[in-house]
Structure formats: structure tokens, C-alpha cells
Length: 151
Image 1: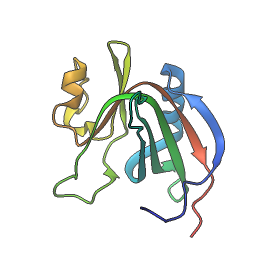
Image 2: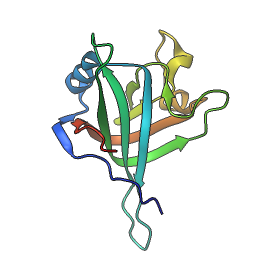
Image 3: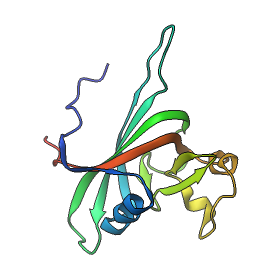
């Protein structure tokens, strides 16, 4: 069990991961060299378990500000599938590109390793998952700005 400090509380948000919400997130932050700080999977077991919820905490740089970083939280609800693989050959948790958000079959896909697509977009939800090390699919979600981390 992890006894480290919990994820900081929200400072701004939550904002829905709609087209407008995603555009606002991607305009506010530069994700090149951002750090994936924490992945929390809340999954129930038993006779009638609910689908998991996932919280992704990313340290991202504010657009246009070289030295100002903020913890950003993506909360994904009713996660239908996900993949978390160790990233070979690079420091685990470093994002090279912004997360790629797509929608197929009424579900939201969040790919944190979308650099393999370059400027292209995947054509299906299967293509989103092929070759990705950090990818999640959910019915929806929100993003929030968190308070700074405490030592």
C-alpha cells in the first residue's frame, strides 16, 4: 500500500472533457516534457462491481511560461478499458506530446503516448490502443487544476 502524500485538492475545475473543455486544456498547457506524476485506478470487485474510475495527475507547464508548472488532474469515469505498460527506453511517465483525445463509438479515448501518430489521427478505437503504452477509454471525464504538491 502506498502511504505517500495524497493527490492535492482541486484549485480550479472540474471542467468537462467535451470538445470545448479539451480545447481549453490544450490551450492552457504545454505537455512537451510534462511528467505523469500519479495514476490512480479505483476498481471495485465483487458480485456487482462498477466500471473503474481513473485519475491521472500530470505536472504540465503553463503555455507561454517557461518556469511555471501546475499539477493537472484528468478524472475518467466508467473506464471500459485501459493499458498501462512500462515505457521502454525512456523515463517512465514523461510525455513527449500532448494527450490525444478521440471519440469512437460514443466513448472517449485518452492516449498519453500519441506521438506515434504524428499529425495524423487514428481511424478507430482499436487503432488508438494499438501500440500505445498509456491509453484509457471511458464514457467521459473532467479536468482540474490542483493545488501545488507539498513536500
